[in-house]
Length: 313
Image (tube, rainbow, N blue to C red; front, side, top):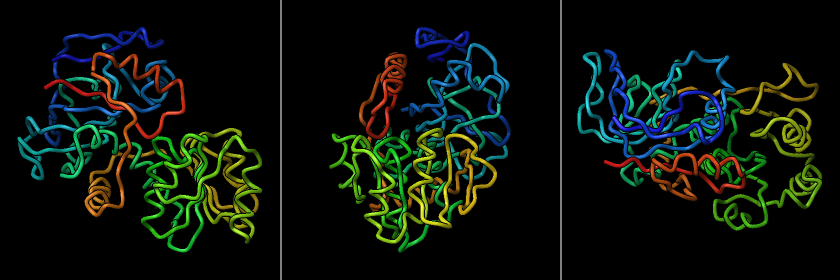
């Protein structure tokens, strides 16, 4: 099959086209003929070798953890899917080699769900990793109606989906973005703050009028995490998806989420899509062979929503 692979860790120049063997299909796996593949920050980290110590790996290595496509074949233990089904999935396996930047990918059937009819192939491929990250973060914190939720970086991949999911729960959302993305945040239903205007925590406290937000998500770690902490009221909850925070923080409830594949949760997201409460935004679609260019665009920052690769049929 045709795929974009790397033969060693490194920069975008390591990504190149190659003909490789299709991935094996286990008893409880589905083989998907990809139509599109999402591009995520973790893809660039894998390319650089930053996750080499966390996962076993093999070369040539196909990057990518998000996919949408049509089921080509199923293992003998699979009962929920059949060839011809349109599906999407967060395809993170425990071994780095058989990713989604290619014509086929194979994953456990529990990692995928039927594609929402309202989404294009590209939109469906943009949703799994970022959508599950946002969903699992909100579940962990127990964000509910009537609460105020803070999102730093609300126009990015995870951020713009977290905004929509929190609003679907009935929460009030305050989110930051650059000046050019303020209207985008408002269209999603958030109260928008320009992160360049300074003293975000004070402005959040001013907006809430009661000491700060009830919950916040940290997408960046470091200074971004400290700023998210500072937006919280006493007793507020923070979840980081960027790095494990300190085990405890006086006056706060602290969590860490490393997103897990979950087909049942993807079905929940699909229902929200069908109900008009959730939709991934795509800034640009690149042909598969321009994956290196997509990585350069992502690493340059300030992407509104997601980038996606289109896989030729």
